[in-house]
Image (tube, rainbow, N blue to C red; front, side, top):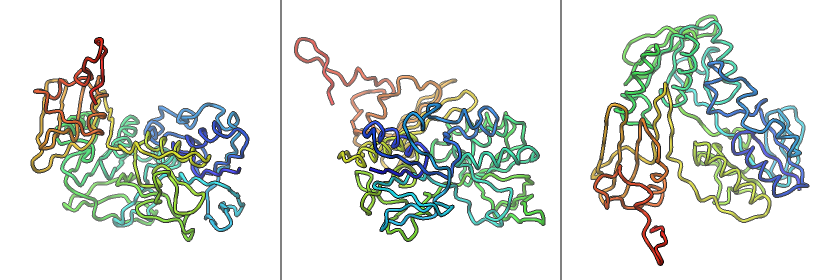
Length: 406
């Protein structure tokens, strides 16, 4: 059997490792545009010079040699599904019996002014992005970041560590609008401002013109305000990296369409990770890669743990955990607690089921909440929801033995 995996991110690496465990003798080839295996969650630490290419690697030191995996560091031009061939950018051909597409996603650069043609506008999704940002940051002093989600704030944090003048523009009225509510978000805004960041909230980039040097040196917002800049980082979302499957017959919706077994509509081709559009969090990408590998090795396993509404945030010593949906809707009940060091917010449905919870400050003993949300367990038995522990879900069975109720 000849396995080919495109992509060396969380899904691809996990799949390769699992395939080798299941099949000691077959050929495994990995192909990637990336020259280094790296954790995209840590790219801001590359920008701040806390890590380098080697310390961003999340695999063991001799992963490819120890697992007898051939890694070709080159991009893919296209896939010929009729011939079962992957055509590389240098026109070399990799034949496959089973193929996994785990190419991840790319930054989305919106069509604002000359954003898409300027030489000083970057996304931050791959190590090659971070390398280009790092190189330009040697001389650039005024940095504009478009978007205040986790990627935008990661970039801001890394550049503030280097003493750069950082400005962040955000369409929403508060930062981290997807992950946090305004109360929790403001705690991070204060810390970033103390570190030197400036925020423009409730507005968006509107005009940006390249000058003769091919760079944008100022961006005007829809409020009429103009901010000078030497470099722009756009953190306005991502799009699945699917250009390589054009004319392949592989079905695409938001990303590559897969069934419960991570299989595409084309025989012997699977997909996992961000390229599927299923989930944007690391643990889910790993699970998808593992399930895909097992099915490529002729097992029959479904990908069932699709809970993706989880974010952990840590900036300037303040930790937050957000699970589920913390945006209340009509008839939802909101419970909040706050003291000098902690903030807690829970959103419950009308029938007492927990939709989402936000913990900021002390997030210890939080393991129970994901289980409650995923399994839609009613929590109206407790007067104060924040007092719930695992002990509330155990009863006493025969001979005094503890029994899990659910």
